[in-house]
Image 1 (tube, rainbow, N blue to C red):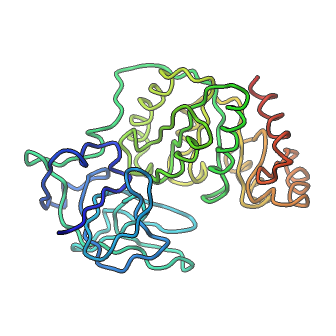
Image 2: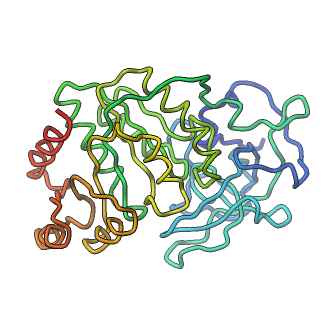
Length: 334
């Protein structure tokens, strides 16, 4: 019997509990967010395990079937690809969350991606089943929640780690917090980390029906607004919102920041190095309230951040720095 694993991109759906069929769909009908099935044809590597709908990571085996979704990725440090580039029935899991497509560029530092054979689309009543079928919907609403925005100079700049600590500090202050990831490529473990840190609720763009936010800007805005309306309806004291990658990458980070608008009360820039802070400031016109990430790994780095930008740097990995982080939060939020 073939093992079928539901990747974490299916977590908003009912596919684990209700019947569905698999059937090939003509190429001109393929779209981002389509649920599809792939058979593993290559040997999995420890880096490319499959993240299930629960967030648990598993080692799937050749011959197993994975249910994921078509989408796009444009990762500066890992890989670039799209479902549009699939040739024949050969595709890849571009993330462990089940983002399927063909890879057009990949870092030489990474092992080969998990290779799959397209088995067909998930269908019901002769129609495609898509992430948008299960997305948060809204006919209108508002968003007026004070927000701590986490942005980065690139992927893997420390945004999620910093966000967890901020959530934890706010919870210790007795505040209710929603943690959200507004842009990026869908992986559940990021926002689960916010929940583990004490967030009262966690949401991301997957809840809005997007497998990644490498989509046209109007499509992104139409999907993210109902998500923000849902967050507002929860009436938290604060939203800790992560914008994956950087505002200059094609993940709609700039659009997400625009949608948050004047609700942003504190901006944390997580940077790969001190000079990257200058780059984002000049290229995007963003002046953060504090800098964190690898750019603050040592006292020398923190001094250089201050010299180059005049902005305080905090190494959140150092337990002794947490009072300084709390001071920033109190100064900007309370």
